[in-house]
Image (cartoon, rainbow, N blue to C red; front, side):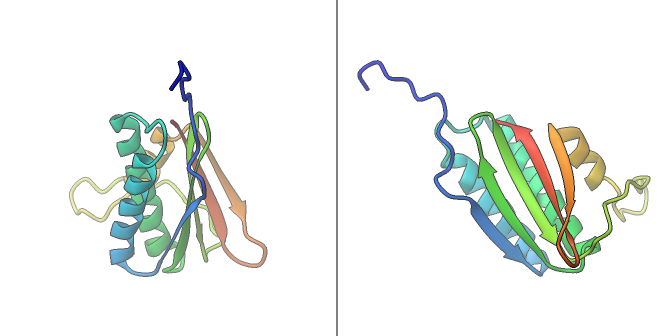
Length: 137
């Protein structure tokens, strides 16, 4: 390549996934995996796995607590990976004590907050919200 080094090239277009069933969470994870694998350079495997976990938790939370449907948009910048999940609920996510014995959850929002570099919640015009989770690339 004539001594040229590619430092970073974002994915050419955002990836969008819409979901309204538990199966859609699997599709969201697969889309996130393909998205990170097609970046040049690809993020290291640990960061890509963290991104997949955040995508999975955001999609799952949108189904369970956000009105049963979501739209996921994946984008990348030179130093970041971003997952934006829009759902129908105007309510912000809330932390709750994880259920260590009954298996009813409570871990997702804690994990999302721990793994992200920057997290914002934007109200949608009308109803709903979008959660933007940004991770280091």
